[in-house]
Length: 129
Image (cartoon, rainbow, N blue to C red; front, side, top):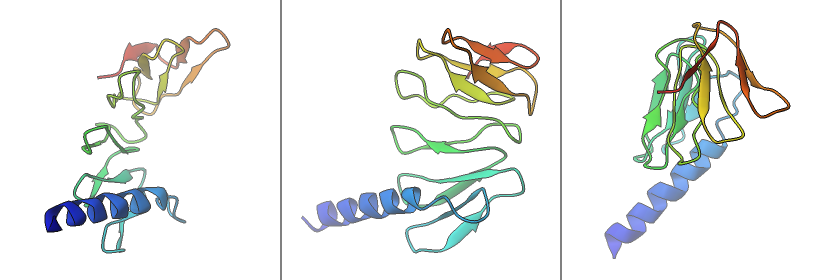
């Protein structure tokens, strides 16, 4: 019973820490102890299943298993597909109207979804990995 309560407390604190990640400096978030941890410039940070802050070279997110996923390149994106899997790319990534993640093939490149629900990317689009 004690472990169940402890587990519920960790999950609650993780949710609270994740919801307060919009700090004054981008790429910073709080761990379960309330300490603010920041990534390198242009990097990102997210809280994992254990309440620890993980930092990366671009925006980071926590997938449905509580694992933090960060892109390999600065300013890269990490949206989730229709199955809740976090996908990364060299540039910004978007989720199309079909639930597929598409990313700019250029590091730091931009991506957007047009009015038809299709991805448009600078330098061309590649599927998120």
